[in-house]
Image 1 (tube, rainbow over the protein chains, first blue to last red):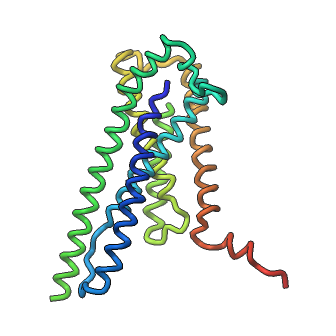
Image 2: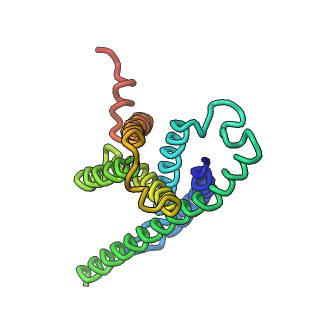
Image 3: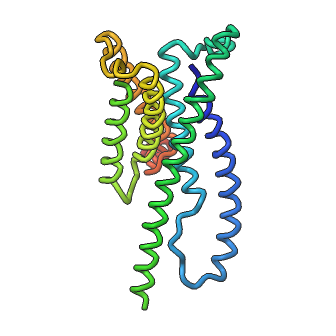
Length: 134
Length: 105
């Protein structure tokens, strides 16, 4: 009914968080560029956050299209057909709290797995670079 | 059917993205994120539907299947339109900017 709103809300929060992290990283990079001798192979957190943002925004957008197709999202107020009466609204909230939350959690868990794999690959590259330098 | 079409699109886009690495000038990663995100979300939807319907979930009516297939294909087209718009706005190759700023000889 409106399950896509939960991952979309998470996407808003993670996008804001990404912008803040990006700003902090830019400050750190400009300071460390003056002191670091050997560049470290590390994926910035902001880049990893962008992967999560991409999945959350992209998935929510395509699901919103599906809801529009089924007439669950309408182009006039209150924009959700289920929000027009109390019974449907209760069902919609139940769906959001079950299906919607599970969607957001699963996307975040899979992103966590991708980040873990990316970290392993990056650390391997770093070790290889260190071994070649010796 | 929508889940299957979305998953298929996600796999195809991931293969194309991988083949184009490390350049990634066409920003296939945008399509990958969109399709994988939607696939995960529809997968959750399918699990909840399966929990409700049981084995009946796997034997949909022909009309429903056709409607779902039509929806799946239109979702793919919609995602491609979004990707093209982002590609033109971000213009990673700089060709749109170059073409717009090009002076007539």
